Image: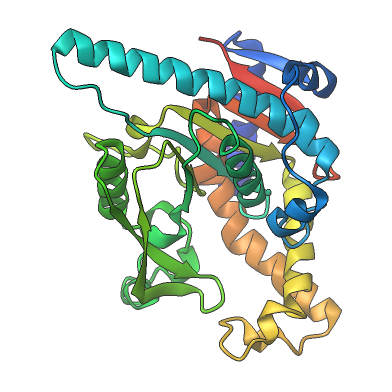
Length: 325
């Protein structure tokens, strides 16, 4: 294949998307068809709730929640019940005490595509179902190597790439959660200082459902065990590359006048840039780092997801692909 690595990746991504649509592996739903699958699932979030769940530049409405998130929460509620029933039957067959094992949902997608907001909303909705009230959300950011390690290895410009994560620690966390350990520690990452907080940890306590969100959750490596071995369901949040870039730049410009002004912010040096300068910096970071990671490491994992949500220019989901069983 000729051309630059990015152009090659673009071509491969287009071919992969065509295969996903034409292979028959997925049922494809337009927005109206998917929304009808909500049935009578009640909307349990308010506008006040949404204010705390939205990302910096993501105008997600209650209509979006009702038409996209609620049918998904209904589907996942069915899936969780089925998984628990199968687990209990298996325990009975083996003659051992019945154990309640966490159901793990992975959410993947690009930087700035809106997967974090999507994960927060989904967590809130799933926690309202009576059979699984304890729903935890963990992001892969906490499993990044600390900046000092990345600097030693020359990886600061590849933060978010597969090699920038402590994969061993991530897999141990997933294994411990899936095994039902009473408490599992998670490293804490600060987006303000752009680094792991060395003296803090969060504790995950036997969740009914764990949502595991991040760039790299569906990536596979040549190893005996990979993260997806622990997942019961996986979601890929998709959008056109041009839209994601526009959202990334928009978010950068908003943060320039908010979080970047904090004295402890790693990005404080960008605070005084003019709008034109800041936009140029944002596009440079996107194309030099995030676009490369998207094309080479993130988009190729899309076809491994059970559910693909394709977002339109206005952040709303227009099409849903659900892998057939």
